[in-house]
Length: 211
Image (cartoon, rainbow, N blue to C red; front, top):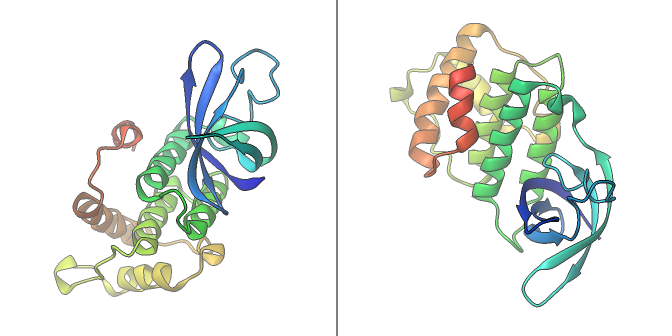
């Protein structure tokens, strides 16, 4: 049994699915869910992206097979929020980009869980959650270069970046910022992500048209 979240799901054959799970115990792993696309199958809902809970897996020669799932949070609010869902899918893509099998990915698992919770909260704008998530993901994976004077950030924006770097994930979503600071963070993040994330994310292309 592993605890984790479905970060990718794709159809295989007529009724099966292949899922990628970011887990607390084993990092990122892939598993097959047999017959999970059949109507009424008990694994149909648990194998959708955003599903967080416990998954019972059996190890085969080259892959895992999922036999049971106990989901504690489906993040159903995102399924009813078109824009929020694409933010969430973008976060899942970044998790898939950064994480590896058998690595310690607990911090990334905590980050995606808390970030999806923040997306479903009325207390935070989607743009702020995105800014915080991008920065923290880059920081967790050791690729944050710091803030240089050339970045041109005002003092309050520099303080915000420092706060994001210092705070544990559990306390990350506990503040808001002015529109001016948020704009600076978004500009800073665009440049940082362009230098750091060597991939074109499909959901990001759609997000850029929505924002």
